[in-house]
Length: 635
Image 1: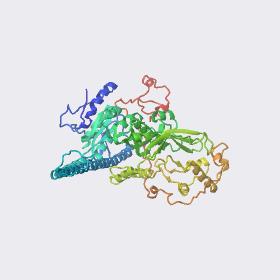
Image 2: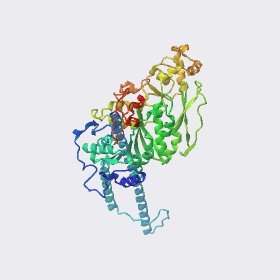
Image 3: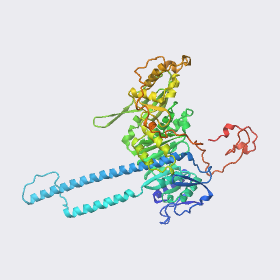
Image 4: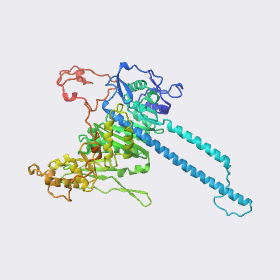
């Protein structure tokens, strides 16, 4: 039986393309009615009956309530409430900025149009004066601007102009109030995020909640119908995420949210083409074992086109790898990205990226991409941009090859070899003005509805304080390398500040320091610290990095440990929740099973529990075969 899904007029134009494409790709879509075959009075999902909530588990988050039936069919993770709260605030901040930019652009267009009209009027007056002089018999010198024109009637023209301006202002006032934002949640699952967007963000016209799982689409339709107001804006759609986005290349979305189970790499090419000029991409990647780990470098390169760094700042390098992958996908189509907010949160990374149609900015990608050289002994890191840009006297840009490498084959500090990382994003991770907008919005939120507001405020404050220089280090790690006692964080930051360098904390790791000082300065500060806090020579092995680092005991400059007034960052002085503890069971959940029936076979053995999808040998009666308990564990 073919199920019919009612849609709004915004998504009518994708129906035929999606259906035809699905036939070619072998993908089955639910039939979606278009404007030509539905009744005019039926809009979105208003024809659906409201479900009986007593038959389900009710989960309320924000202003939305979803009906939860079976956790094995539809994915839902309550730990991601912080992600959804922050995303709602970010889209609101983006919509305010986007509206202001469009209003300013229209105002500038009106000014230009007025200037052109004024020039035409001046030209008409000059021609009128010339005609009067000719009628009076005076000689007129010929000019290049003399032409036959229709002379306006001053009275009529003045009245028409005033009426036209009044009509224009009234129309603009109406347009400002009219909803216009279109959002695609490409992997919607329960539809909770899409429903929250539709209910909590102003000026939303349509939210397309898409999922490839028929069970998820049924859940979305049920949840949309249960929430009053959601059927007016939220539309459930059954389809492949990439097919939906590719079909929207000619009429793109304002906002696209990608929150997959694992990597978002397969969806990036379609996403950058389906978002409008100046639109917003919200992308989550939960595969930090690949992005920030060291066990799968080949998989990291396959997914993101770069190698992860085997060092303590791996969570920031994970952000930069994801941004580089997005920027590369966008540059292929003459687009450029601007990271507005890039966060490493718990077990995933979340980036908020603005995409602009700008081939000129896209050409800067090479200069905004870098390789990293990380010492395998002491952890010192150097950066190599892939391109170089110089500005000519006339303001034009000249692109050329970068010079390198910045290091020799062995580390200048300890003599160990380097590990190569990247290519990855070398530009800023955050836009401070955008963070200010989100912070203002958080001040207006009800903490009873948005329960993660304290954590949002703390993380945004840390992100705003971060330097744009890449990567960070911890005093504990460098002191462990030197085999000395760990200096307090304020002592380390004071020495850097007194030497004329900048420092800041990072949102990614508590106690970490970002600075624009090179690693030679950091090691010199520790050499001075060791004078007052000697190391045990017995702890220094012959061929260790410490032995090489301590061959020179005198620092190259006068280190001053006097407490600097800015040694404590503002976020630490105002005592906000900067690094709150994770709640119980905060990790990622297992992947949803969709419509696949759950296998309740029980395996007897050490640590035995119900195991889904038991191997075929157990189904064939080999229950007594030895069980590997490691294989029973699920993610």
